[in-house]
Image (cartoon, rainbow, N blue to C red; front, side, top):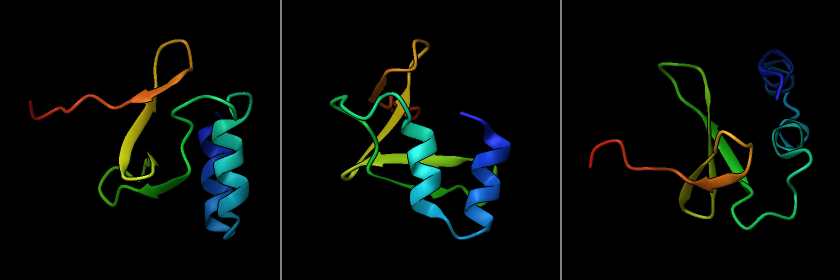
Amino acid sequence: MDQTHFTNLCRAGKFKEALGLAIQGHEDEKYTPSRFSIDKKTRLPIFYRGNKRVEPDEDGVWQLAKNPNA
């Protein structure tokens, strides 16, 4: 995913297109995100599938995020 293009789409208010860019090629996976939010401190996207946080692994496959506080 091109982070600059993703950010530009968000700034333009094209949130569906930005999400589509993030999941491009992985639409049929079990944990493909259905929504996202932007972290206010880091300005990076946080992806969710329902109420569960998801992130791509090293192969680009969407997985449930590991709890960093555990």
